[in-house]
Image (cartoon, rainbow over the protein chains, first blue to last red):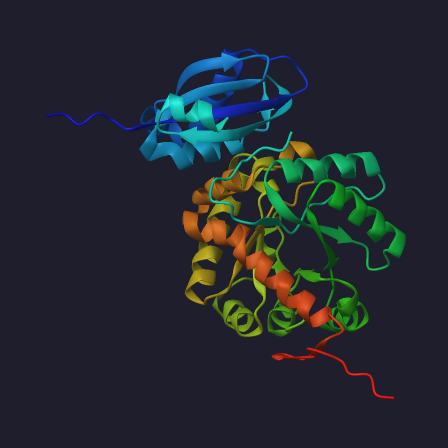
Length: 104
Length: 251
């Protein structure tokens, strides 16, 4: 039996003066992971956008659970989104979307 | 907007929050942000000649934001004599004393002096990082901690960050071998460089500090230093292990 890959869901809060769309934020995270861990690391991280809540400036992404700390490090090291100063904070981490929604 | 960022309810501390003391609204925003991110204790570097009004104003801001304030002083001595002079003059006025070691003799003197709490090294000039085996041995005997600031890791780019990471990896391994406590702090001058304790702990994986050690460096290690110094500065302190537990007034 093939074992399914474990994932972690991260709720992120974006702090920026300019309005941002989800794709721009996701690109900034991906490029930060790429800068720190290269193409091999980015492929292992397997980051996907799950949902975006523009009213709360929050987004939910998914990554491989083996790469969770590295993805968190890459998110923490993001200081610019779309050429403007920004910060991305991890509000919660969970193994399921249901548990994540309870946490945040 | 107080959120429960941490499920394990560890008490986190950021011993180096470089708030602009002349810009009170900005200082207020940064302290509030630290509280929101889950810190219970913030250390704010003050000038050695800081007035009582300045300190009480900061204490008021911190109590409103529900964080504990630690008064801290950073020394930048040019030689060991200057360091000894600074320690003699100001040690008892501040809860935390950090020394930025620019020369080897300052680094050695700071590491062996029990009045020094935190050892800091340059993040831009890596030739001025003197934390080697000998320094670690002295620091472990004198209970000084190695302070690692994390905001420069966010600010530096490309090869300067790579070089800093490789230096930090070597120093962290040396500190762990010699049992020197490591203290992680933000060193942030701006809200944009402030991150939650878990995010900073994740950042330390870049220089191979294990996650439990990183969390200890953000919580227990700074708290131990602060509590030890508060005990020493209290009027009941007599000597290490001896304190006044009660006073009797005689007629």
